[in-house]
Each structure stands twice: as structure tokens, then as C-alpha cells.
Image (tube, rainbow, N blue to C red; front, side, top):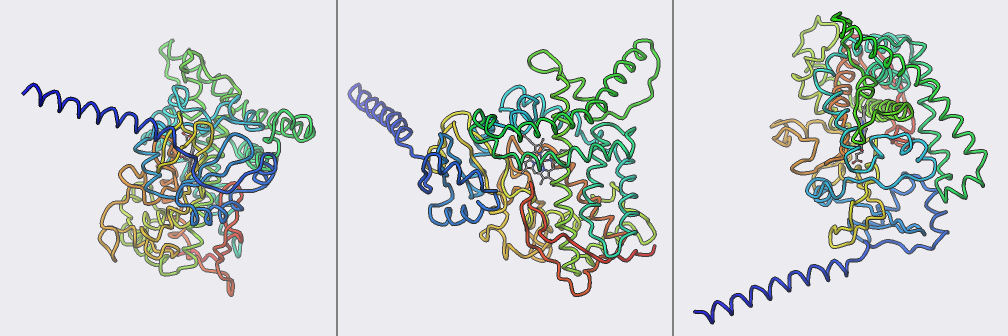
Amino acid sequence: MEFWFVIILSICLAALLKLILGLSSSRRKLKLPPGPLSLPFISDLFWVRKSFADLEPILRSLHAKYGPVVALRRGGSRPAVFVSSRLLAHQALVQDGATFADRPPTVGVETISTSRHRKINSTPYGPMWQVLRRNLTAEFLHPVRVRSYSPARKWVLKKLLDSLRRDEPVQPVGHFRCTIFSILVHMCFGDRIDEQQIKEVEEVQRVMPLILGRFEILNLWPSLGKVLFRRQWKEFNRLSQKQKKVLLPLIRVHAIASRTKKRKEEQGKDYGDNVVCYADTLLNLELPEKRKLNEDEMVSLCSEFLNGGTGSTSTALQWIMANIVKYPAVQETLYSEIRAMIGPKVVTVDEDDLQRLPYLKAVVLEGLRRHPPAHHVLPHAVTEDTELDGFLIPRKGTVNFMVAEMGWDPEVWEDPMAFRPDRFLVNRHGGGGMEFDITGAKEIKMMPFGAGLRMCPAYTLALLHLEYFVANLVWAFEWKAVDGDEVDLSEKEEHTFVMKNPLQAILTPRLK
Ligand code: HEM
């Protein structure tokens, strides 16, 4: 008996030892994912000139050659890993979420626009990021608070419909941008902001993403860049200062109001202003370092809120409306659904009605699948060297997930390049037979908002805005292509992936 006990124990110990040794040696032997050869310096120069739109076809052929995980080694020490498989994305972002939730360190111009002046999207994974993100999601984007902006949404909708009535034919993208921006400015700085102020904020905010793109060269060897590109650095700093000059007074108004409110409350008086804006929540925020945000950090966070939300949402809105114009049958089905639900006499579709419009939701989801505004998520980084699909994902590097490729995967989506909202309908026309979960918590089929811990914190707000404006645009007008002008769905990269030839349409008001 004792003999057998010793034998079994030895076998178990040997197996355990083998497992441990096997694991550590396989970790030691792990190689970087495959990819093309790189030459120091020359590779840097080659890649820095490439936008993601230039890279996308190159990456597609690399994935076809090497598989779903490839690495581009710039000359320096930071390889960029690209993942095209939705199964691996789920494994990394959801199952191993905490390891993949970091961001690469910021460099060059980004340090001015992000880390020194903090943003959620570039803050490393840790307590500071958690506090900033929780403030946006749980505190500010709480459904009750989002609802308190219904009157502002109604007001911008009215302005949008009025402005569309004035043009013939209409090129709506500018109007869409202005509408989404206006509602976000109200949410960021409160509804006392006037039209002139909105214009000023829009002007400084519009140039910021373009500037970051234009000054990309400054990110290469930053210390040397400061000497070589002195003029560009000066120009970049001038524009950053201008942004601060416009946004700071709007934040300071809330700082003063908050002090007055506190004083009045201490005196037992009713202050009578209960709509809380994003700037208010930032002013109240207590950071893990036991301090408040400084003014530079607040400017940066407000700017992130405005720019993060405007380009992406207005781009998606244009793509959805372009498909609605291109496919009149989709427009007719959507219009009939709204009419059947709210009746023929109602002037505008209310936020509460959206829940009863499944085809509308399907049109929005199909728009995001077929034309995701971001073709890849923001670069991620891992908190420690780790393994994915048998390859080493090094801590010093970036991991990028290919959003568009996943939404166009023919193994998941039949005829993936066709615009077919029906595929999102529950139990209709061969639809998926289930409510679609855009968070990808159980399975990723597409991820226009990313997935896991770094998923877009404002995805419910974005969906609300898309559904609300698409429903009302179709309810107010019949949209038709300009005679002889095919709606062209080609795309180009401009911070987000936009229509290369912006939508033009003839709008006929629907009489009610
Ligand atoms: C259709 C509209 C939108 C799309 C398609 C979109 C998409 C995305 C994507 C793909 C990411 C990166 C996720 C990752 O890195 O894994 C992201 C992050 C982010 N988005 Fe959005 N977004 C939209 C609207 C908005 C809005 C309205 C806001 C704010 C008002 C916003 C704020 C942010 C922020 C702060 C992050 C960084 C999150 C973090 O790093 O923790 N987005 N979004």
C-alpha cells in the first residue's frame, strides 16, 4: 500500500514538475508574431508616413500570409501587433481583459495633448484611469442624467430639421456634425451656453484632431524633433493655448457656480439649478492622489469628451443615412415601422418611442457593422509580457484590433459587404434569433465600440443619438438620391473613416 502511495505521489510530482518546466520553457521560447523584416531607422521613416488607411491593405495581405496575429517591427524597440480574429480579440480583451487594458506610453506631441493634460483614452490602466472612467460612465452618463438632456436634444433636432429645409440639394454631413457637437457641448458645459460660444468651441475643437495628424512627424525621435521642427512645435503650442483660452472660461463659470451653490445650500437656500454637466462632475472629482483635477487636465478631458463623441457619431450618422438613400426599400420599411408605432399625426419621434422600433435599431447596428467609424480600436498595451495564439505579446509594444475586418467576417456574416438590417432582427427573415449584444461580453461578432475594459464608455449615448436622429430624419423627410447621382460608398480616412464623396440628397418634407 505504502509502495503504491509513493509511486503515485512520484508520478504526480513528476507530472507537476514537467508542467511547470514545460510552461516556463514555452514562455521562454515564445516568439514575436510573424511579420515583414524591419531595418532600423528606414522602417521608422517608412511607417510614420503611413496612415491606417494606407496600412489596412498591407495588413490584410500580411494576415492572409501569416495568420490572424502579425507584428510590424518598426526600427525601434516597440513592435506593433495586429489582431484580426474576433475569437482572439475575445480571448484578449474580454477573458484576459485586465492584462490587455493598458495603453502604450504617449510620445511627442501626444504628451502635450494627453498625458501631461490627462485624458481617459491615454491614461494607463490603474486607479487614475478607473476614477476618470467611472466618473464618465457611472456618474455622468447615468441614464437619469442622460435623460435630463432630452430638452437640449429636442432643441438641436429642431435646428437640424430647419437647416436641412433650407438647402436643395442638401449635403448633410456638416449639419450632422454641428448637431452632434451642439448636444455634446450642452452636456459638457451646461445648457446656458449660447450659439456664439458653441461656434468658438467648435472652431478650436475642429482643428485639434487635424493638428495631431499634421504634426505626426514630431512624434519621431521627440527630443531631436524639437530642434529640427521648431516651427511646427511653436505652431502646435500656439493652437493648444488657443484651445485653453476658449474652454477655460466655460469651466470656470461652473467652478464659481459650484462655490455659490455650496454657499447657498449651507445657508439653507435653494439654488434652483439641477442640470449637472460633465464639467461639474470633473470639478467635484477626488483623484486617487487625494487632489482635484487642475485646469489643464479639465480642458483636456472636456476636449476628449467633445472630440471623442462628435467625429465618430456624425460619421456613423452620415453612413447610415447614405445607405437609407441608396436603398429606398430600407427607408420605406423604417418609415412604415415608425408610422405604425407612433401614429400618423405626431410631429417628432420621442426618445421614449425608440424602444419600440426594432427595425430602427437594426438599421443603426447594420450601419455600424458595415461602416465602423474606427477601423481599429485605439492601440492597447499589455501590463506584462503575455501570450496570444502561441506568440509573445511584449509589454513594450502596441496591440491593435482590426474592427472592420471582424464586422466583415464572412464566417459570421452572410454576404458581409451588403447592407441588410434584417440580419439583426429577432426571428425575422432569417435574422439571428436573439437580441444582439454589442458589448461582445459572451462572444464578439463585431466591435464598432471595442470590447472589454477599454470599450467605448459612451456607447449607449452614441446609440441613443444615432437612433434618435435617424428616426426623426426619416420621419420628417423623404430622402432621395440626386438625379443621376449614385450614392458612392467609397471611404477615406480623416481621423475616422468618412465618405470619400459626401452624401448629397433631395429632401421632401413629409406632411403630417
Ligand atoms: C458612434 C460613436 C462612437 C464610436 C463608434 C466609438 C468608438 C470607440 C472605440 C472603438 C474606442 C476604443 C476602444 C478600445 O480602445 O478598445 C472608443 C473609446 C472611447 N470613446 Fe468612443 N465611440 C463613439 C462615441 C463616443 C462618445 C459619444 C464619447 C463621449 C462623449 C466617446 C468617448 C470615448 C472615450 C473617452 C474612449 C476611451 C475609453 C478608454 O480608454 O477607457 N465615444 N470609442
